[in-house]
Length: 157
Image 1 (cartoon, rainbow, N blue to C red):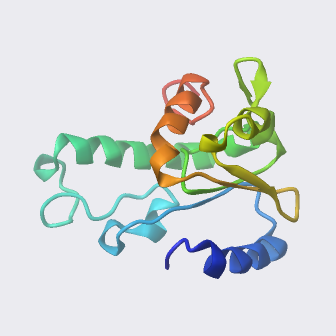
Image 2: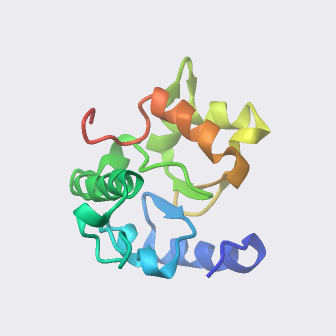
């Protein structure tokens, strides 16, 4: 599935009405990399054979696998209830605790709205907000949220 706004967002809105999530993400991921496992913090597809044998993985793959696996701890601790994000994705579904997090002297909501390069916010049902970030802007937005300690890190949260 693609994250085509015209095709997928209406479907996502229907799902939100039914399941009323407190947090969600939308991201592209190659099938061999386990997109359905990724959401739970489970690694798949790393290394030349895709078996995830650490001695065969590159340092970049090892770092990514560690980051993915640590999210399992974040899920257990339900860190999204405290407003922490797993990361910044093309599609982010945020609740009020997320939007109240602060970057400098402003809330995340104010920070996003202050600059179009930080994405667009749209209110959805069930107290959830849709935050869409363009692929070209993911890294600068991510860096700002890491610096503000809003993105979950097992070592600091």
